[in-house]
Amino acid sequence: MTAIKSYLLRLILCGLLTGLAGALLQGKRAGRALRLCGGCLLILTALRPLLRVELGKLPDLVTGLTQAQRAEEAKRKNDELLRGLVEEQTAVWIAERAKDLGLLVSASVTTRKTEAGCFVPDAVLLRGSASTAQREALNAVLCRELGLSPEKLRWEGG
Image (cartoon, rainbow, N blue to C red; front, side):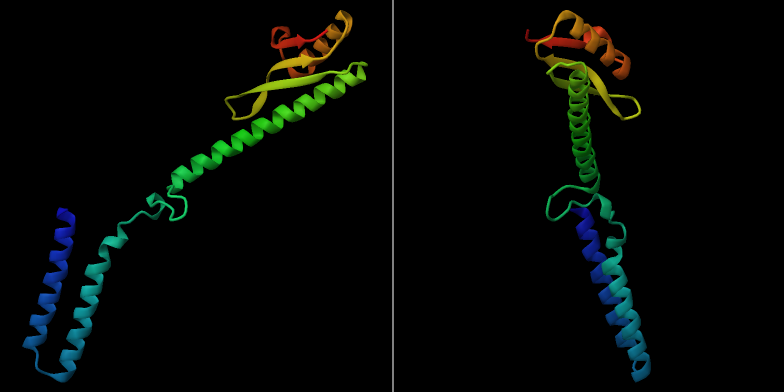
């Protein structure tokens, strides 16, 4: 509240100073110049606090979020989309590899974020029926191609 009081006091004092200086000068030309200078001084005093405003820290009028919050929200959404794409495309790739081996398998993939910020497959849940030899063949392909350990591959179904 003291900042508002100080601001108002500065405006009042500028107005008073301009008024007093105008009363001291009697000439028409000098009065105009003084009014111009006084008006400029009053405008500068009134607008000075706006120079200190950091526009990036102000909330958006529509969303109510600051620029930093909007950036964080956008990063979170991008990460979700990227994670979803990696999981979906990896599941499709696994289904294609299984089809090459003569299997009808669906896959659910979970990913993890690396230190570099990339999403890589972390675990795979395979659903479908396959013999032990077929499972081992598919597991070998997945371990070799995706760099997963055999413990990260789980099977459900016959």
